[in-house]
Length: 81
Image 1 (cartoon, rainbow, N blue to C red):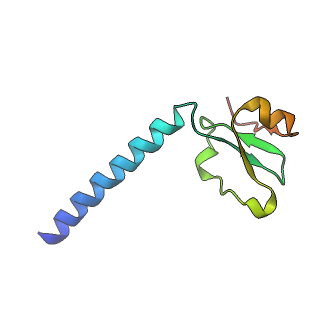
Image 2: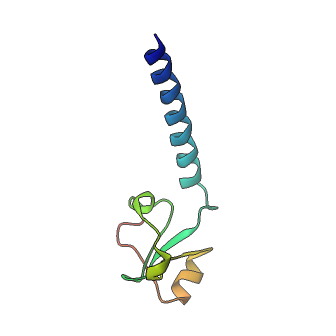
């Protein structure tokens, strides 16, 4: 019974986290992520956005707009809409 309740609680937490991530992905408030070694940027709606690990020591950075990313010399990832 205890294990069941733990699994039930874990499922609720996972559902909540997924809903929050989906909400951020659909909003324009999530930062644009720039991959410095490849000089490409990813929007929140890009398929690979959530798998990116930001490495500031390699020059990765976040942008507030696409214009800002383009001015810094980055291009949009090919898998972005």
